[in-house]
Image 1: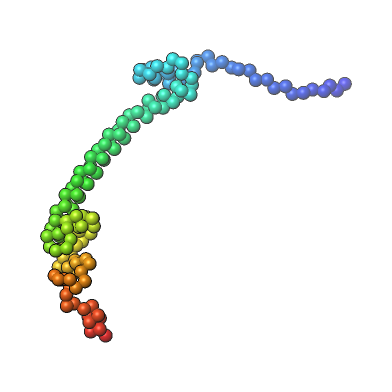
Image 2 (image 1 turned 180 degrees about the vertical axis):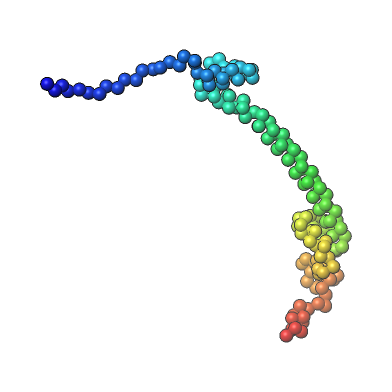
Length: 148
């Protein structure tokens, strides 16, 4: 006679006879580092262990960032000193611009002006036929018409 049957699956907890070696290793490392593990759950213990492992790298990164900041500070100071010198030199060669005007242009532009002083026209902003105008008697239109 046929009998109706069903499949019954049961799961039983198998205890690890050796204990949780990874957890024990993490707790031992934290205790060795002087970090109290009392009251920490697994997530907190793992986070503390990860922070402990990252600390040497973080310390080296902080030191490298400090050295980089020192190098940048020295480079900026050198660039500022160079800009001061070039701006003063350029200001001495013009009647209408001050050293601060040249500093506002930036180091790259001041270097360009310094190297091209033999080729460049004199700088005279806002001059429109006033006394002392460096362009007095110069007609751009006359130059353009002469080339036609």
